[in-house]
Image 1 (tube, one colour):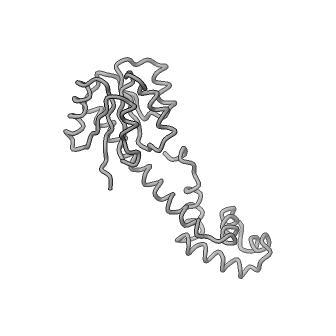
Image 2 (tube, one colour):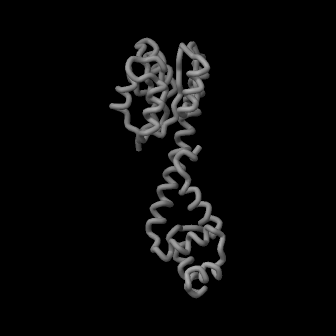
Image 3 (cartoon, one colour):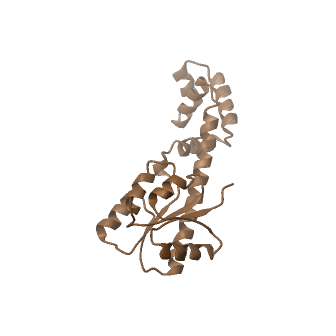
Length: 207
């Protein structure tokens, strides 16, 4: 299992070393980069944690980086740090998906609190996505007929209605429904509906 990591991106050597030391002082792993491109080239998207990036840097800025990773596989929340904040910059950062926007100079404890919050959010997202993948795998084991039954159960139809829709006997529908429940490992109909609907959420709707 990959170790939780704070990805730090800042072209200011002194600032980068200072924040790196601060992060490590509470027992967290910190991986530092001088440019956004170095991060994109070297960081593993599958590593849990968070991204802490400056705004003004050579090449890609922190805001450019935010927009770049939206199209990649990075799940980790992003915290923007900057010594040159203004309202349009903050608006762009949040619209691009930043978790928080911190101005320099900042209080060390406040930064650590924000990092911990981001790490907890990342862990929660990954748990949801893992459960989603499991349910999607189970859905893939259903036959065409079982899938047809499932869709009607999700729509709230009773066995009698499903039977009429599919031109089958109610007893046959009960057999298919039982197989669906078993394959999906659902406790009851409500559990089945909940897990399928949650699994079908788009990634953007996952908090």
